[in-house]
Length: 134
Image (tube, rainbow, N blue to C red):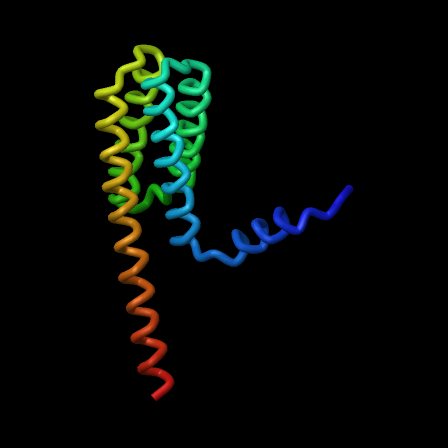
């Protein structure tokens, strides 16, 4: 088997990411697939729509499977992921752009919330590190 340096780099990059960075990467991929859904609807490319919805659902189901259910926020996210799952099934079957737009908007808002939380955690870690090194 041939060694692919690009693939090796990607694997190494992922293996060194924090859990917050991995979460943001998943959300970025989810948003990208939802954008593909939108483009596919605009162009009436229904095979691409279905493939993009399926990829989006795979990500949502993975996010749901990784929740720690002992926390209230996880139960709330579970309900939200169930909602996304249901709505994307409606998009796939009914080719409903308005539903897709609502889901995409909510996913982007959720991604930005996680991005801000990751930034806040990184800032706190930096402050803690600076306090210990002085």
